[in-house]
Image 1 (cartoon, rainbow, N blue to C red):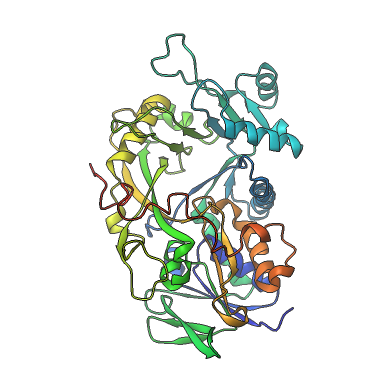
Image 2: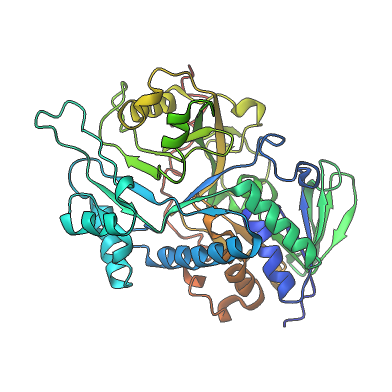
Length: 465
């Protein structure tokens, strides 16, 4: 092991928990800080509005490295399910509905990669008789759902691919499981708005550079550490402004319906046993003429919630940036809104979700939403994570594990192993993901991060219903 002995991890979410467990297994002393009182709420989404749920996919087009990481994660989830006796990962399958009655380019790339990796048999293309026959034989036939294309004159239906590797994670339960696992291994947790809220990174001057030597919490206490690892999700840039060129906080929209358990027909129809995670990247336009983008729905939860997510437009919240932030747009940057202010979703999201519901969930057409909220993510320049030492700090003293871009949750059991390898070994890391997760200041500003405060994505410009 290196000379590093102690690590202060900022953030007790997906990335922070996974990293903390992996570092502790390597022998480091690890303390995790978070402003949320997870020790009291137990990651319960009813008690804490910030807790999320997430789908699981292995489909990544040409990004073979993420496909392989997803399969590594899935294997770990299955093992955790067996060991814990809980269904933290629910293998309900994922139905990837195409924009038309033909396979899209991304789907063709995904299937080609799966063929190359020898797992094409886990995928069932709805229009292929041999795939349908295989799906029926393996018990997946009922989840190859048919959806007619609206206004189609010849009764065509949307093409779809059922991924039997897919499903969803019960994120609240999974985070609680990893919190308990980390605690059992000796990780120290400091929670709460006073004791666990990190206000700043403590620095020392080393020549003309700076070195991170710990963190200062809101209560004024300084916690010393050899390495500070920030896994703060959409709040990361506020602690490390150097990341403002790499990351942007953006909000995905979530709406729910609630099924009464007394409604046996709907309760059964949308159960994980009968209904797959369903995704659709549409081509129809909304009333403003924009592509309605990506929408997905999860099977109902044990308490009857049907959750629908919209990521076609990732909304931003541009506010004046503090002095000294290296990169701003018109002096502003996007930061998360408070949970209270995130309880309403923009009209464009409502339109897209309603269009999706009308086509794919007609049981809920015209039914009022049970709840809505904006879920804040950390978008990167290329949807890939940023897991590396911060080069503006000396002695590898500041590390970041962030940039989830809305697809990090499923990697919880294995993400930390790769991140800890990089933290400990840098360019000598053996993780196959090292090249993809580097600090990359020269990457082109794209993926929407180039749009700035004048974009219609800015929540201040968006229309609300």
